[in-house]
Image 1 (tube, helix red, strand yellow):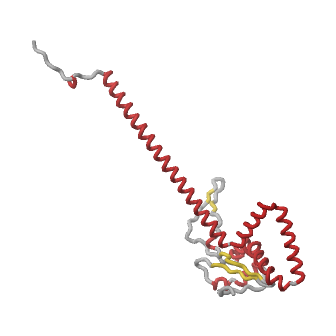
Image 2 (cartoon, one colour):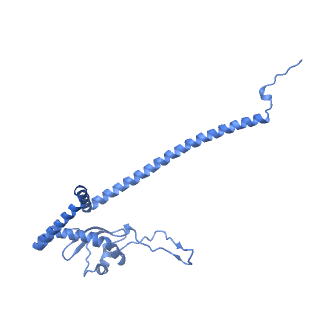
Image 3 (spheres, rainbow, N blue to C red):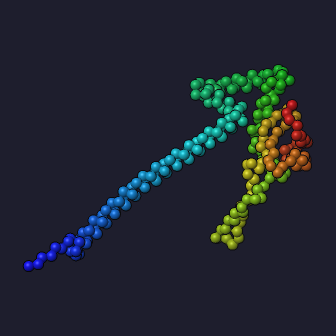
Length: 233
């Protein structure tokens, strides 16, 4: 009698065994993919959170820097707003209105009693502040555009707006950017004159303002406009 030993590798697998092994391998693969996907999701979530925090901190820091620069540049307005806010917080709005009324009355009596001293110590400062923020700041950009004292952005792309309900395409009107308008640095005002100091933008020269001085005077509604490159006295 002859017997032969058969190894397990030589025994063919049945269909059920193949399905069982395939299902187990598929389950392992799905589990591994789940773990990898879960890990990648956590990594992406952490990266997204870090990116959001970084962007928020960046904009917050940029906003603080811009606010600090603006506060230093316009320190008079910043001081006034701070004092008014603190006053209203501690003593209320009514006391502020009463105090402002009393100060206005004192200034009015001072102006009537002694106009030269009032104009020297208070009037010119109040007039300069009024002229800068209520006259030149809102109106001077329009005056400069009307006399051609701006630098247009000729290198920018042209955007054409097409309306499907109409046959014609329209291009939006080009408006100068903020950095293409001369910026007002300070204003000094006297009884019959205003002195405005501006910072020119690249591409402009003092001669441009000298050429447009007459047109600028007409736009301002004054008799004469004189351009000078000298500093303040």
